[in-house]
Amino acid sequence: MELKREDVRHVASLARLSLTPEEEEQYRAQLSAILDAVDQLKTLDTSAVEPTSHATLAESLLRPDVPRGPNDTEKLLSNAPARVGTSFAVPRILAGVE
Amino acid sequence: MELTDWSMLELSSKLASKEISSIEATRASLDRIAKIDKKVGAFLKVDAEGALAQAQASDARRAAGKAAGPLDGVPIGLKDIFLTEGLETTCGSKILKGFIPPYDGTVVRLLKEAGLPILGKLNQDEFAMGSSSETSAFFPVHNPYDLTRTPGGSSGGSAAAVAAREAFGSLGTDTGGSIRQPASLTNLVGLKPTYGRVSRYGVIAFASSLDQVGPMTRTVADNAALLQILAVPDPLDSTAAKVPAADYRAELEGGVKGLTLGLPKEYFGQGIDPEVEAAVRAAAELYRKLGANVVEVSLPHTEYALATYYLLAPAECSSNLARYDGVRFGLRAQAPGATKGLKELYSQTREQGFGPEVKRRVMLGTYALSAGYYDAYYLKAQRVRTLIRQDFEKAFSQVDAILSPTSPVPAFGLGEKISDPLAMYLVDSLTLPCNLAGLPGLSMPGGFTRGGLPIGVQLLGKPFDEARLLRIARAFEREHDFISRKPAL
Image (cartoon, rainbow over all chains, first blue to last red; front, side, top):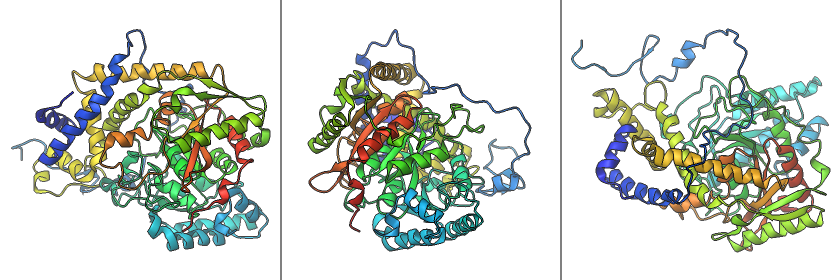
């Protein structure tokens, strides 16, 4: 599967990565090679096989529905790159709105 | 024999008899780290103050006759993937540089409650993606047995620290072999428990249907003792199993008489180093002499496991790593473009914060999950995963455990495979099928190459059969003295 540069740009946009042109070319070549290798799976007939999404071998655990105290807001915000009061600050989302 | 050469349980008995204090043991570890870690590169962060405070508290408990358990006072190291309250946790990535977790992961809490001083945070491949610890955003780890070679990965720092006697034991994580492969390359016992055996709350996620936490130690009994602390159901992790833990040390000396071990013929194919194969065959022969029945088994879909893994793990990672966006914690891009809008903030932050292997896997996973390709790649891989799981179910109807090489090759040179992703991925080909099936797997010392590099032997078991794997490993360990061959540093 030979990827094109525009395929790489599309995937990078979905993955929220602003790649450099050099990276685009590098990943185009490397991902093409990896996709060629994984194409091996197509040789297997799996039409009658159910997918396995999780290796959960035992019953999963639900905790009792008991209310607990809230997390410490200050602690949770202590790693914020930018904050206003008790909010995380981000660039303006809606253009042209004051 | 120096203090730092003792096993965790040897140290434990000397702490119990008051021959030595935890402060002395912790200082010995810290001194060793200060002396040799520049050469090894195992530690990203040393927490001398924290470790000594924990050691002092441990000594006070022992003095009052209130030891928290057998390993109270035994210092260990933690892979930097575990959240440690107040102690920087980077997961080997620039995007988390300076991140101070607001809470302890469950296993960290359990270790603290059991009284083990935490020496610091251990180097690793970035977000556990890699097989050589070279994708660490900070510096590579060197194999204590040959500093020009890798200790394996992704838990390379966890392996190197224990092999180099900087820590008495450590914790790693294993998504496709990241505990077992480095253990194999550094003469250690590394256990990946059954999926769900150990809580992952507060463990930075890579591929959530595969990740598992486990102990890395120099002896089998140490491994069992450490697993005992970790194997606890956790209401904070819905995938942590309700299955009660066994007493992992009770039957360690039970031997292998009457057990059946399977040699999977597909694990001895092309690409296996002859010295590695010879060591595994010798182990099989020894087990026969000890009374085990050794038979050949077949896991016919083994050749598809690598491709299956390299679709599923990147798909899950692309989703898990979406949280690193520069908003709530970690790096926020300061480039001019990053202030334009939210999408630019995300893209610039991730571009600057992630290294090449992480970007490669995020790209691959995003592609496999994207519209038009989901069925052909992701769903297809999930179907093949079922076939791989069924292979193991069939094999385990005939045998109690599977015996194989851990890594197809001994430690390779730093720089040797880093520019060729497919060559690097091949290193995991014998460890990752076990993760796809959710089974427990263990790597144990199996001898040395003529050139003096450690060789690992892998044991795979039935779900929640860790006690039997440890017992089988112990039966082999009793017959050799590989542990005494310590690295010359």
